[in-house]
Amino acid sequence: MQLKVAISEHDHLQGPEDATVTLVEYGDYQCPDCVRVHPTVKLLQRRFGASLRFVFRNFPLAEIHAFAEPAAEAAEFAAAHRQFWEMHDAIFEREGPLSSELLFSLAKENGLDASALTEALRERTFLKRVKQDFMGGVRSGVNGTPTFFVNGKRHDEGTDFESLAAAIEAVRSKFDGALSPA
Amino acid sequence: MSKILDSGVTAPDFTLHATPDQSVSLSEFKGGPVILAFYPADWSPVCGDQMALYNELLPEFRKHHAEIIGISVDGVWCHAAFAKERNIHFPLLADFEPKGAVAQMYGAYRAEGISERALFVIDKHGVIRWSYLSPVAVNPGADGILEALESLQQELAHAT
Image (cartoon, rainbow over all chains, first blue to last red; front, top):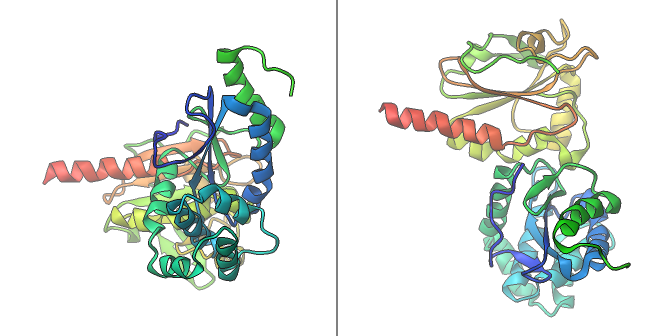
């Protein structure tokens, strides 16, 4: 399967634009596997440094995860205030279960206006954006969360560090040669 | 891997229980396309679950006036508990007795006693228009279903 929606300035991006490898994750903030894979992504970023660009796209399974959509909307709300990654990390690194109260308190901790977030969640201001990510994912063959794409190709092996690192390294070494020891 | 029924073939009719006191026949669905999704078993891990994904996509399927039906060899009470826990809003049919008989008609039964992950898009005249067999461990997603529904819709637009 190939990624059907090209990376654009609308995406949430980390890492240099000219990185050799782009890793795209379709994720759900309430999915336990996505919570588990979050530190793995951080390790991959540390391992591959400037060779790796990371993109996160929303894929909330709202029928099984009641807070997946509000959490994604809260992260998009933060993005509108240039705080996407802070909120993204805070939601994945939370202690305890997701709730509206938790989203408001994480927003406050990141200097965001909790009452504006309340309003945005009530009006569902950012839902359209979240749904767009979701449908783009469906078109690309995302079948659950987390689903990763390495330079546009769906990664069907495991989501453990070794498996993802091997897939990234296979692409990276083709272009950049040997990696300096980590 | 099994050899599933191909596009162009008339979809074999069947009647299966959706709940203990309600059964569903394929021939009842005449208004639009029907998506048949055979899957091995209820209760696969949540975030990678095929039925959970289709459940999220019901509004998309409805845009095409399509109905989706899940079929596995699980019994009605198992389906009921699964549907309740996962908030599933479409019928899950029990291909339970004789076990796997409907899956067999579609060429989607595995020797170990479960159905394949096989998808069929059937048009309103009861003809299979698209089918897909996925490796049993791989959730096939929904991109193929949506493409098949779109091409049916395009045909309809051309015909009028």
